[in-house]
Each structure stands twice: as structure tokens, then as C-alpha cells.
Length: 108
Image (cartoon, rainbow, N blue to C red; front, side, top):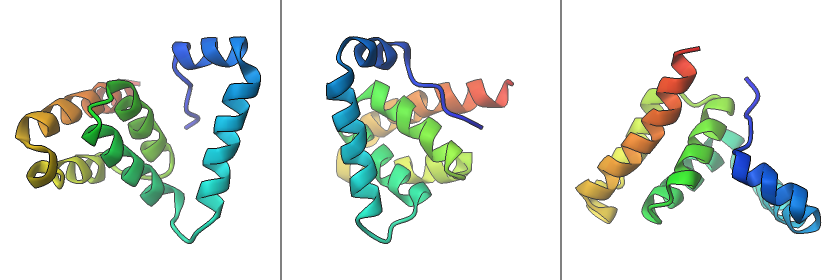
């Protein structure tokens, strides 16, 4: 399952390719710098996105986590673990955003 970037991401990449290429290279370099596997890295980044209340980033890292082999239950658990840190309402929002992606993928 290949992930399809969001339209806004593709639009900015077309307009500012050097900027986006540099950001992509940074992400790739950081992932290769240590022993954490891609699935775990995506779940960590998903948790960070939820903590920032970034709907777009939650969508992106949910897609990426699924692509890296995470199961829906792992995504839900990852987000629920944040409850004592970021609060129940924030977790509920993040779960809703993750479900946007999970439901869309399971409908196909």
C-alpha cells in the first residue's frame, strides 16, 4: 500500500521543490540515524502530531504508520496512551482524525 501525499503537500512541493526536498532529506536522515524501525518511528511521530493537535499531521502519520505495518489497534492504543499527558478531549480529536484515514483505507 503506497501512501499518497496530501494535495496541499504536493502543491507546496511543486512551488518550492528545494524546500520540500530538504525537509524530506532531513526526515530520511533522522530515521537512518538510529535503531528505531519505521513503524515505531511513525507511531512516535503520530503521538507528537496528536500532542500538537495537528489534524493534517495525524492524517499523514496514520497513513504512514499503516504503510509501515501498524495495525489500527496499535494506532488507537498509541493515541489513547496520551490521555494522561494531553487530556481526553485532545485524544478524542486525534482518534477522530486517525479514524478518517483508517475508515477510508478499510472502505477500499
